[in-house]
Figure (spheres, rainbow, N blue to C red):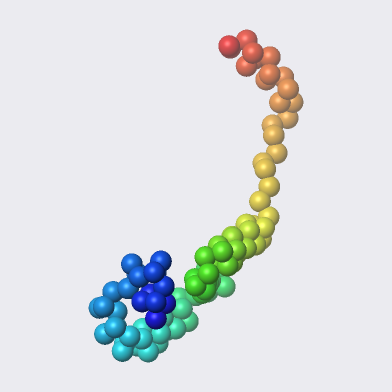
Length: 93
């Protein structure tokens, strides 16, 4: 109804969607099955609410940040005596 009643959303309305509404239950069953059969602890699926863009963006960003933190990434250790290469680089210029 929002796509019909709200002027800024009318561009999203497609009359063909009306027939698709009858299949919504089938779509949701297929969606649930796909998530259950393909999501793992190693590579989980996340179901993100998308009806509020700011909230969707917040959730996605939070998941990315949490995932990156779990990687415990660190810069590699520099080679020993790296300062001695400074003069070699300056000479090459």
